[in-house]
Length: 209
Image (cartoon, rainbow, N blue to C red):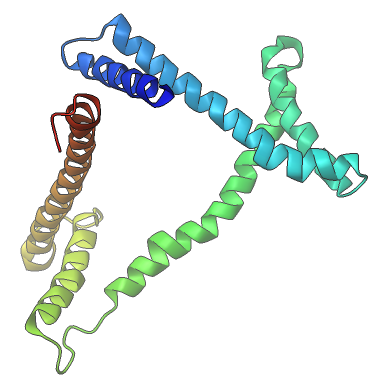
């Protein structure tokens, strides 16, 4: 019985979301607000049970790991945003969070987005015994990366064989990359649509085997 009720609720809210294709309406807003509210409520309960209780409440109540009181106080200072007279206190946890985030993220971003990209580009153009398509792929990677860099090199006019032709190749490769990314995004959305249509026609209406 509960499975049937859940199936109908899921189907009704799926149709409510699809109703946005016609225009924005109260049914769509209800589904949207319920998704946001349910997600937020679930994350609050999950954070309390998986983070606060095992890492803060239990150890501190037993007199262990008392240093965790400091981040707990910083976290509570976020609540001061609701009280205008002491709202300035919330700047401390925000500043600490931003500083920590920058400090932690910077080396990982350097490793992921710069060093790994440079390493992936510094490859031999020709490897003895390798198939021709590997050699072609290596040439496209190396010269495509150089052409893209030339396009973003604005200190020199894009004229002549090197900067002129290189920037034109670079912009074409960049457009191809944007097109592939957009196509990948569209395919992902279509996959989600196919999944919901299969749910409606199969699980809900039973029209699909």
